[in-house]
Image (cartoon, rainbow, N blue to C red; front, top):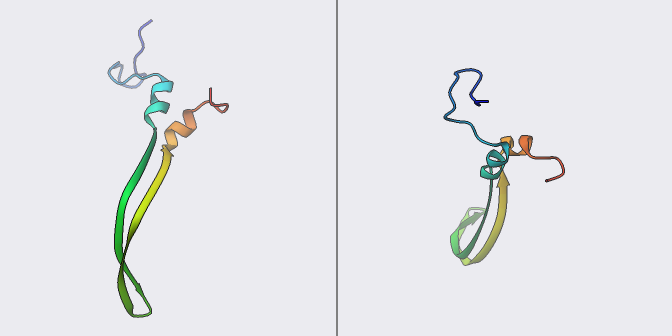
Length: 71
């Protein structure tokens, strides 16, 4: 059985659902110096410090295709 797109009959973009889900997820971290300008009530000043951030993101398509139990 040859897998092909039912619309254009090509097989150049076929991927497993698990691959689409995996490529739609990302995680990252940032640690380092931060700084900027703050303004309040007509006055402004500079701020600086050190930040550590982490998080993750999942595309809407990956959410739709993911197994509901995370398997």
